[in-house]
Length: 290
Image (cartoon, rainbow, N blue to C red; front, side, top):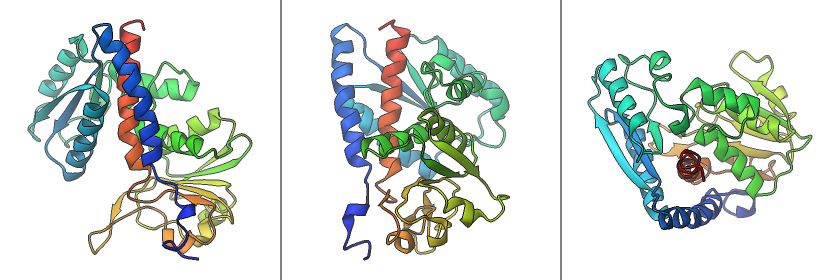
């Protein structure tokens, strides 16, 4: 069996994103009828290629759903005080309900300081530690990172049983690994977080019913990382030497073993912008007591 001859194993993100968008269109229509239009602010310092690509996707998704958007494009060498002043203005603007700050920030900007400047109620991608704490506590009023939430939405859409299942998360970042683990734990999965210093990493990973790969290393997870019949969610986006996109999982090498696997591209990334839009609508409703 190979990737091209058995497409049934590939679980794409588009159907998940489309379902979320359909629901959001109805919610936004109801809000607009009440005179409220959800609005997203995007704050970008510089013009990194991956930021611009995500921005285009986010703007298109929001436009299709009926969410207003405004992009604040800042010079890459912007001073920290100016960046924080902009966040304060957005915090005080009642017409803006959610803000996305592209990270990593330029080196002169201190994330440890700036993350506290963003209003938690508008922090739709879990930059402020208050929202991260809410993820850990299971407080549904918070906003998990969009990519971590996308992992969970994909598994639920494809009716993957989580309760009591062994899940291994490769990667411990605050953006994906840790929050994804917390979200899966809240669904009663038994979660192991692995990292570069995990002893006998392939053995630990291959014990999992569900493997979430989020390490940012091209095709790192090979067949010896994967249990027979496992479900694999590949969060990684890497560029190969020949310029093609690939994930953290060697898809061709594991396709014979898995029951389901997300592709790269067209997998988790395609769901992330719909989660972003979902969080904007949620924030809008909370701020307007809806």
